[in-house]
Image (tube, rainbow, N blue to C red; front, side, top):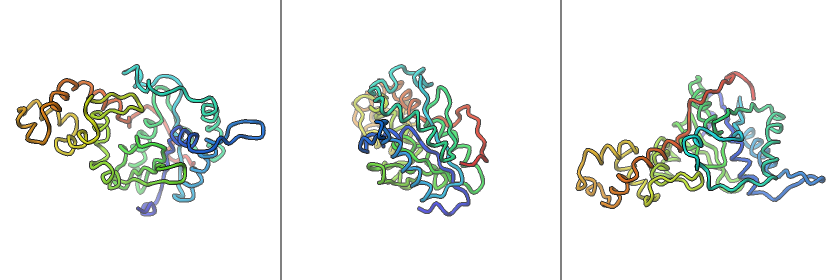
Amino acid sequence: MSVKSQNKTVVLLDVHAIIHRSYHALPEFKTASGVPTGALYGLSTMVFKIITEFKPDRVYGCFDLPGKTIRHEAYSEYKGTREKPDEDLVSQIKESRKLLESFGIIAVSKEGYEADDMIGTLANKIKKEKNTKVIIASGDMDTLQLVDGENVLVYTLKKGINDTILYNEEKVFERFGFKPDKLADYKGLRGDPSDNIIGVPGIGEKTATDLILKLGSIEDIFKFIKKNSEEEFVKKGFSKRIRALLIEHEEDAKFSKALATIHTDAPIVFDPLAKG
């Protein structure tokens, strides 16, 4: 996949995801005075790699802020299973803004929203600019739902901080068997333990994938169930038990999808011509 086919390239950094990945992948680097620096080293390495590989015209660093988000307001147990981060990690997250500022990278955050929502909103705006490609750099897979053909790509870490992969729509399909716009439906069905999203209890990866491939989105799945008999559902290759689970947990599925969906309309203001 070439990123040279369009005139401009804008990179959106998922700062917290990259720092978190770096913190756990690298040795405990420290300064002579004992200040932890490993995660910041990993972030710097990623930034240098991105600048060298993609030569972006602009770079934005998207941050989470302390405190509850709109998802916590909707579901108090959102991410409730996550352990409190180490102080060494927290201190480096705080310092990361200064680090990115030294690179000339623009920081973007909004109270009540996650970094993913900043990324989704910026990607949605910037991809409409003429001859502009957006590359999302992240340490996890959540942002894959934002992939849009060759216009919005996700550059993510496979292993450590050096083994990377660039996802376009074709690559997402190769990995999951469906297009990026169905990833929130997938999480809505199978859940996501890392974010404490429950999904539909009893439905795993294979069944969730089969439901999406044969019936479509969560909304389409329940539309089919309500319009067709149990026999028709079984003819699609699913058991009566799966149908019963879906009916019992319809609201859980729809709510889980909503939690997993990245916002692309967060109330942020940014200068599209600012240089990073």
